[in-house]
Image (cartoon, rainbow, N blue to C red; front, side, top):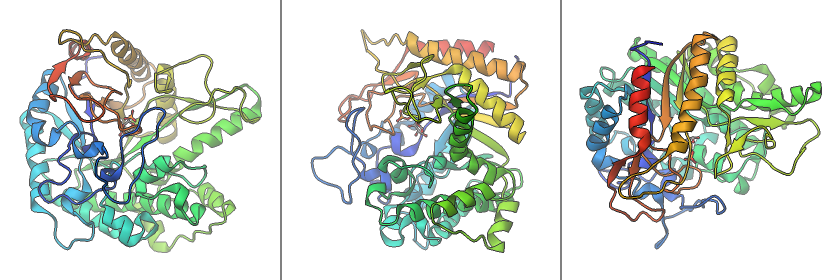
Length: 469
Ligand code: BGP
C-alpha cells in the first residue's frame, strides 16, 4: 500500500510523561495523587500528597522540559503524527477559575508549533484521565452537571487558542471503561472521575450520572468545536475489546455480545445522534431512571463525531455459564486458550484487531484511526542497546492484520499510532519498567535515573517498515 497520507505515529498522555506537576501555575490534578504500584500491588489514591510517597506523575519522563529532543527522535523514526493530551489542570488549575492560566496555554502552543515545524500532525486529546482535583472535591466530579460546563469552558479555550494549528481533536480517552453495568474497580472509576468506587455511597447512581454526563460533555464539545472551526476533525478515543463467545452455544454468543455493548454504547451515543434506548433500560434495571431533556436530545443529534479512535490491546472471552477456566483475563471474562499473554496478563491477539476494525467499519461506516496499540514489556539494557525483538514481532503481527483489514476488507482506517513510543509511566501500575517504546528512557520505578534517551532495535525497524508499507 502506498499511501503517503497514512498517519504513522505514537500516542502519549501528559500525566504519564510530562512531570513538572507543580510548574508554571499547574493545579493539582487527579493523577497527581496516585501512587506507584506494580502488577501485584494496585496503585493507591490519596486525598492529599503524603511525604515520602512516590507519585509518578510528579516526574513522568520530564517531557515537559525535553519535548524538543523527543520530537526530533519521533521525526527521525518517521512519525507523521503525535497524539498528545492537554492536562486540564494546566489550563484551569482549579477547574472553576474565571480566567485560564496563560503559562499553561503557551506551553502547549510551543509544543504544538514544534510538532508543526517537524511536519508532525498533532492529534490533541482534551481529557486523558486528567482533571483538576478541585472539581472532584468541591463539585463531586462528573456526578454534577456543572462539571460539564467547566469542561466546555476549557474545551472552548483550547479550540479557540489552537484553532489554526490543530485539526484533529479527541474529546475524551477511554471513558467507556467506566460503566454502570459492571462491578467497577477503583482504578477505572478514579482515572475518569477522581472518585473511588469502593467509597461511593450510591455506586449505581454515581456510575450512571458520571458516564452519562461525560458522554453528554463529549457531544456538546463536538458541536462547540465545529462552530469555532468547521474544518476541525473531532473524534473520541474508545478502548475497545472484541469479545469472543466461549463456544458456538447461542447463549455464549449473546453473553459475548452484551459484554461488548458495555463499551460500544458510547460509540453508538456519539455517532448515531441519540443516546441508546438499550442503555437507558440497563440504567432502569440498576434502579436509575434517567429522563433525557429535549436539550440533551438535541445535543446528541448535533454533536456526532467525525471519526472513531480505537485503542486496541487485546480481546476477551465470555461464557454464559460463567468461568470455564480458573484463568481470568485482564480485559474481562476468562483467558483464551488459543492466545498468549504479556507479562502483565494482557492477551495478545493481532487478529482481534482485524476483527474489531471489521465490526466497527460495518456498523458505523466512519473513518477510523488506531490511536493506541503496543506491548508492555521489561527491556534489558546491555552496552547501550535494547534488543527488543519481542516488540518488533508484536507490532509486525498487528500491522500485518491491519494491512489485511485495509486492503482486503476495505476498512477505512487512516492511521496507526503506537502507545508510548517513548518509554513512559504505566497508567495501570505506575511503573516505568512496563515499557512500550521504541525509545528507551533511563529511569526506574522510583523515578531514579539519568533520563537519557536511547534508540532500541525497534526504532530502526519501525522507521524501515513504515517507509516501505
Ligand atoms: C490505555 C491508556 C493509556 C496507556 C495504555 C497502556 O488504556 O489510554 O494511558 O497507559 O492503556 O496501559 P498501561 O500503561 O497500564 O500499560
